[in-house]
Image (cartoon, rainbow, N blue to C red; front, side, top):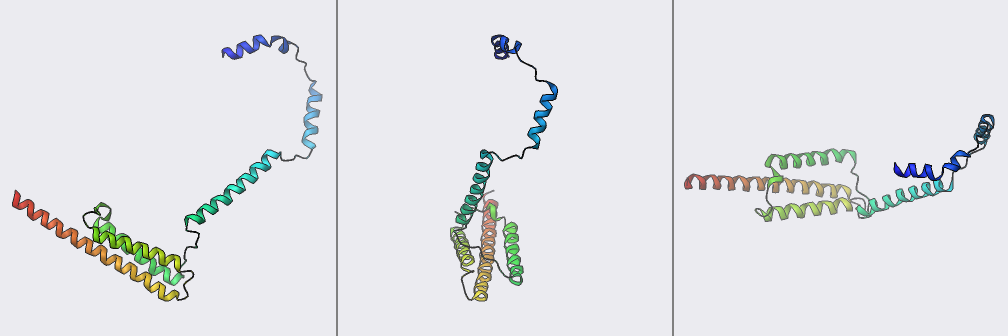
Length: 173
């Protein structure tokens, strides 16, 4: 606030000698400018070009994030079965409390799941170029079946360990 007051005091003389523009002349000037076609300033053209470049680069990074390869799209009749297996796996993981498992406690089973995931992702990437799509789809289904078996084994191992721990606690107490 003090800066403003200082500026008013310093420039008092300029403020006192401001000429008033006649009202009709002011409106005529505004009207003349409205009638002229407007050109986009260079800054806006640069902004448009920069935003287009940004969109292009984002697409490139997205493509690079996918490994630069197309993601496979399964035929509709196969997609339903793929979705069913994905739901079964998600249900099984939720049922056994997969997120709470400690991978150090079951290293072999977690290694198998990691290997299955890696092989499945590799097969999905190869799907577009693979000529025997039906055979590859059968392999994808086998990955899901193996994953469900490993999850079931993980559930059994977990149940065994719980029983051992409960038996141990009963003996100790």
